[in-house]
Length: 394
Image (tube, rainbow, N blue to C red; front, side, top):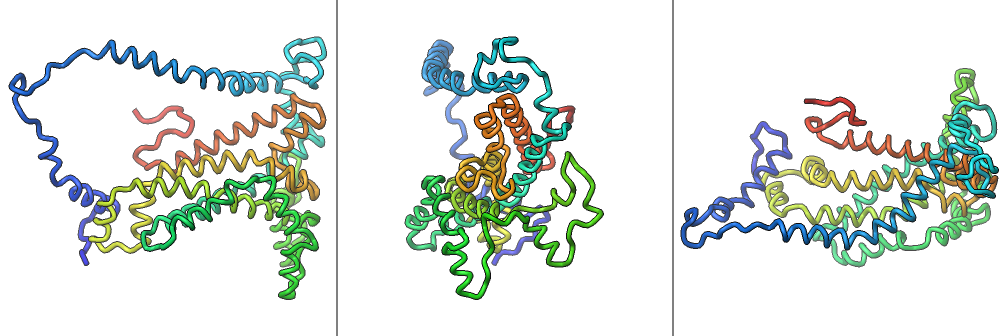
């Protein structure tokens, strides 16, 4: 077993040795032959005309997609932004100011944060619910997807195609259908409570109990709405913010982690299979353990895939809608409300399109901020730039 006596970090040693092993003949391959202007040399030709034609052809090919994105994405987003500054109720032209539509400025946004009322209460509750939802779903689905990818990518595993298909299957199944099945499984008389009862455990009322898991933990040690938790933050007491996810939200978390990990597994598999074989050989020669190889070699080299998975996870979790819609529409007592569902409810249920659009753009800003933060965290220290691009090194 080779001994690592280099003072550099382990990942640099392994990568540099792998590079030397892979490039032992690179000098011979890349060495130019012949003299400039001698036999076999080619006279450079201007490719400006060819590049121009290629550029035109490229724009012709992408033009249909640009038009489609403009019609069905950019224009609706611009319209929604305009609506968020109005009191449009959906029965008139949103751009006909003074004819049933009035510009209210930032009122729809300030109502979400500064005005006492049901709108702020519901929105802040949905933000708190989604915070715990994101805090649990994104790490769990990322870790599970990476673990499955490492397992399936192991050449020692027999039947890898079967396991890859089995792990990916929940991701291609209709989320509405799976949510409906989970409603039956976790009902008060469902299979889950029946299984718990077989072991003498009294199962919870999954979609009726509005208490949060943290509240249940506090109550177990005799803490119930103490005085230090009575302070108000954005219209909610600190005790309400510390409720944790309800048991109903916990079911949704379990459902989403199970159904999304397969897709992210495929992304990690693609990244793992793209790693140079020489790196694995160098790591084996240096006697690294499996954990050392994962931590110092594999994870740093699949960082782009890790960034993609976490980013897609953040976007998907903050936009969760279909499971919420099917599994209770925010019940019990609003503990499964999400900003996306609340925006839909405000717009198409209460016909307050301005308020619903404002909620959507607040969520958009939250996603942008969190994406920038996690990009900053995943970037090497010597390559980091200010999170929002202000200032920076010269």
